[in-house]
Length: 512
Picture: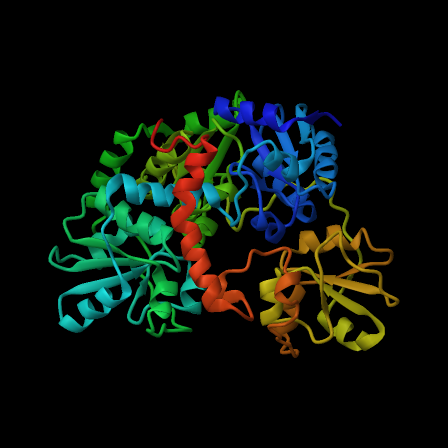
C-alpha cells in the first residue's frame, strides 16, 4: 500500500481541491484527536459510508488513523471497491503532529470552527443566560427557538423554547414570528448552532432583533438555571404561509454567495456524467424526504448539513447539488456551504416534478451476505443458551437494550462460548457483523421488533462505561461524571477553534 508523508499531505491539502481524508477509527476515537479536514469512516461501517463519501472513485484519498493499522485496512477496502488513488498517512496522527501540524479534538470540527468564524465575521449579537432570564422576566415580547434536532431538544432545552432545527429557521420564521417587535433568541447545546441559526435569520433580512444564547443549554445550566426535559414542542409541518417571502430572502442570500440553480433534468445529467465528485442531498425534514425525493438523493437536513458537513461531504472542491420542495432551505444551506468550504453548490428548481423515491435512503452494499435470522419470539425461547450482541451506538445501548445482551463494535466482538445473535438499528450492519462470526445469526427487526412485542428491556448508564464508548464522542451531558468540568472544557474548546484554524492555515472561510 502506498504511503504519503505528513509534509506531502499538508501540501495536497493546501491546494484546496480534489482530496478526501478518511479516518478509519471509530467516531469516539476520532473525536479524541484528528486532522482538521479528516472525515470519519470507521472500519465497522465502511460498507455503509465509503461509497457515499466517495461517489467518484478516481479522486485522491488518504486514509489516516492513530497508529493502530486501521488506515491500511480501510485503504485496501477502498481499492477493492474501485478507488484508484489511495494512500495511507505514514506514521498516522503522531507523524502529523511531529511534523509540526496541529491535531484537533471534537467532532464536526470544520463546521464548528466555521460557526465561530461567522460570529467574528458578521458580529452576531448574543445574550448571556442571566440576560435571557432578565428578558423573559421583563415581559418584553420574545420567542426562544432551539435550533437542534428533536432528539437533542427533548433531552434538555431552555424553558418555553420551541424546537426549530437550523435548516428550518429562515423558512418558517415568518409564520412563527409575524411581529417584527418580537425579540428572537436562538439556542443550541453550546455555541455554534446558536450562532448559525441566529445569523441565518440576520442574513435573510428578518426585521426583528435576533440574538444567539451564548453557550446554549450548557451555559444556562452552568449559570444556575434549570432546563426542561422530555418536551417535544415544534413547528407546524407543511409549507409555511410566508414561503414566498422566505424564498425572496433566501434567493438574495444565495446569489450573494454564488449559489446557482439548475433544472432537475440538468441535475440528473450532471450526476450521471460523473465528470467530478458530486454529492446530491435533500435538505428537507425526514418526513418530507421519506414521502418522496429525487432518486439517488441522500437525506441531509439543512441545519445539520452545515453543522456536521463531514457526515455527507468528504472531498474538497466537490460539486454539491441540493434539493427541497421550493429551494428556500437549499439556497440558505448552499450559501453557508459556499462560505465554509468553497464547494460548488447547485440548487435544483422543480425538484419534485417527476418520478420520486419514497422511504429512507439506503446505501449500496453489494458485499452484503444475509445471515440466518431469529424472530423475537424465537430469541426469547432460546433464553441464555445464546449471547445477544448489540451494535447500537453505545449511548443508545445505555438507554435501552435486551436484558443480558452485550454491547460491541463490529469487528471488535469478543469471543463467546455461546452461539451469537446480533442486533443493530441498521439490519444491514447486523448481517455484515453476523457473517464475520461463526454461526452468527441476526435478530429480525432488531430491538424495535423486540419492543413492539412488549418484551422487556434494560437500561444502564454504566454499560458501557464512558471510557469504553469508542464509537461515540460523548457530549458533556452524556458523561457519568465530571459533567460540569466537561461543559466548561467544551465551551472553551469551541471558542478557541478560531485560533486553531489560524494555526492550521488551510481553512479559507469566506474566500470562495
